[in-house]
Image (cartoon, rainbow over the protein chains, first blue to last red):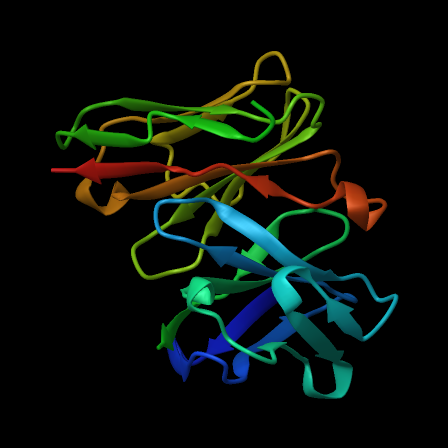
Length: 113
Length: 118
């Protein structure tokens, strides 16, 4: 069984400030972990993925996430927020065999000018 | 197009009506997934195909939900006798394959079909 918990359904930051979106997971097997972004009325776009090759994963648009097994966490960060980063962000965990993903409930990121 | 295409984008149905939602995956993608996303929640897995074979339908909420992919490409999600609780965005995703090398496991999502049952 696998599950994802995203702490904080809404996060608000000022433009240029650090972005931190939290994700904790539970998985009975070594997980594959993903962060997706969803803009209004659009599908999910993959930001980055954890493959077990490196604990610090870099994605698109300067986002990165660090896999911490001891904390079962995979938090998403970005050093400096842009207005265009305002969107819904989803953390997901996948079983390598089945391929289906279990998603968190999402975090809405608001960026203030 | 190069991405996953879903139609219609919006569907309004009267309670009790049958609906059919279409998904055109990326050409050559073996695996196809359907997810249901209720308002304010993350997507929840419904069913999964590998080519034309439906390998996992554990997420289908009731026997009113039926999915098919007869030729291993286009897929249709059918909901019979729709109820208000079926109102959601239905997302389709495809991947080159499932399992194996992670690069081929990445799911590409369509924009979804927003179903409203009145």
